[in-house]
Image (cartoon, rainbow, N blue to C red; front, side):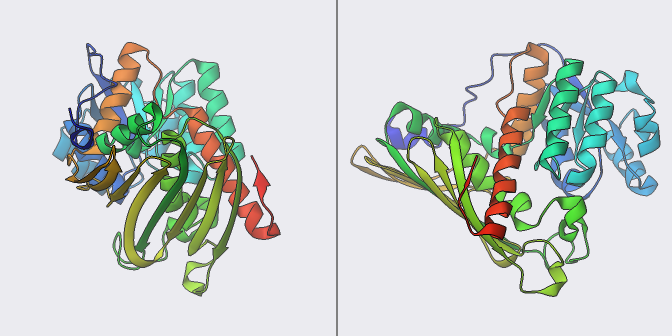
Length: 355
């Protein structure tokens, strides 16, 4: 297969086949869970939704009817261990500060976990989540959907096999207008620092951070960054963020994110022998446009259009059924939490912060 054509190859390099189905409890029925995650989970291989947990009886009833779920629970019922015979694993889609309690309960109930990003609202919370699941012997994966996007996985192959030469720089940007996204209100958990753990950085800026770390072999070893909030409506969270990431081998990353800008979503990998630019890189279920210079060939392709959210659930189910380690592990999520905490430290001190 030509190098350019490989960029739109949607084959599953992680799929070895598996027998059975992982029954999933969806903890938290916010907009993303209802509109994006549940449709993907119901369509995914190797897993299916069977239980919903929500503080909204009306939403839970609607979801139960639409997906023919076995049970719906309120949060007290979930934490008390009700209906544990109806699910094997949980998908945690609550605001980040509530991830810890949901994951610790899952571990206590001997249930595997797929947790939304960011992993927690604090580094300490992420560490406790990892420890709880390790002690219980259950899988804890972070739902980094870009790691299972076929275009991103093909770019990873090109990076690691040397097609781009020595990888020297990563660039990425993601922005939305929070006022018009998800109902158009700013008084949501996303602008509550206690619930979200931050603003544009953990909600959006984690995408290029994790994608760069996923693509590159060398560990990240330092960050420097700054945040700005000029509109009081965003409260104490960062409205905009820009930061650089240093890797142990000398490669660098330069990334930005914004809650209040023209929608943007792109990622670029620059090497000594080639480059790959992905437009629409982080749009959920987006049709990636890939432009690249590879082996002297100019490539311009439309991505596969595969639903990377569905792929993420399928990969999680496959990992649980086969015992193979998930790509997006708790260690992966914790590394991002530490890097983002270092960005905030750098913003306060003006200094480069080692990881």
